[in-house]
Image 1 (cartoon, rainbow, N blue to C red):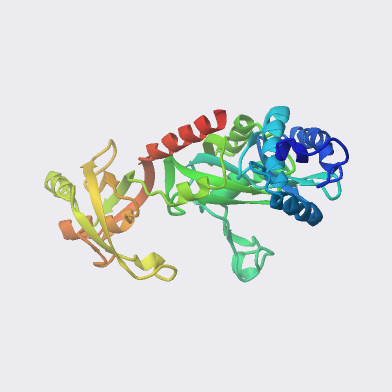
Image 2: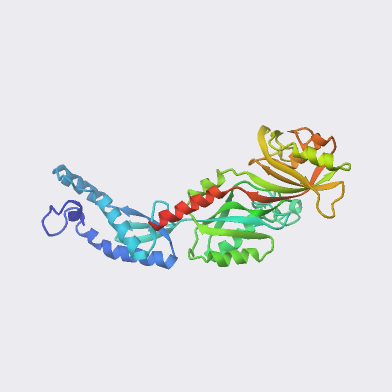
Length: 372
């Protein structure tokens, strides 16, 4: 191996650099391939631990002006990555699911499990679920009078998706990273993008289709488009901001007729000034945000009287829809309430569309890269 890295310039015999230890490389690659197949890993990275004495001897050889020579570490990394990928069928990359440690001082091969990252879009069918786990801060999940012994304030979308995957993957834990969030009392039929980070998965050969069916069986949450991604996709999802479409059922203080319905339409294209809503001011910075209403219309569905209507709203990412309707005591301007000069409140809210086609393009590029 060392001779190959140095252009076959040395005479045959015991290697001056490694003493023949590098000749075990093929055997070590076979061991590593078996470990990757056992874990069901789809990708890997490698690390080679080279004895310092090897490096010192190599430097002396370089001092002899061996033009075109390559360091044994670089040579081994290049050779191992190609051969191991072929032998295991797994993809080599810096963000591999597992890291294979080739320790030449010991002649050993070890597999270190990395975290799994699973992309998807969740539909929140049932209201009353928070997106993330909301543990009771007083008892830290143990249960106390403050949380009525539950250890948490709400059940969560994160748990509905994370628990089945944790069990199937024999993982230690999980964390959901999502593109925005809806309120606890709102639903989402559009499918909100997320990446589930699964920590130290013992089983990586997951049937994502079967897991999607198991998650949907709860009747509360669905997980669509599940696919394995790299760690870097977490940032792609969490840093992306998409326009959204909502259906909001509203209740008016007084009868609202056709004239009021037409007035609501005048909010289309308007830039809102939204000061941080009263309901979240305790946990968010008190800022004034500028958000545009892309489209808005008011319709009356069968059974709705003059005190009720349904609003179809498309707005920029980060728009507070409930406050667009209520005005939040003047903290959102303009608003439906302010425009109609009467109290108006949102009684039911559903996210019906998310303009996140950009992520499908990114997923396509990831798949194309993996096939090369």
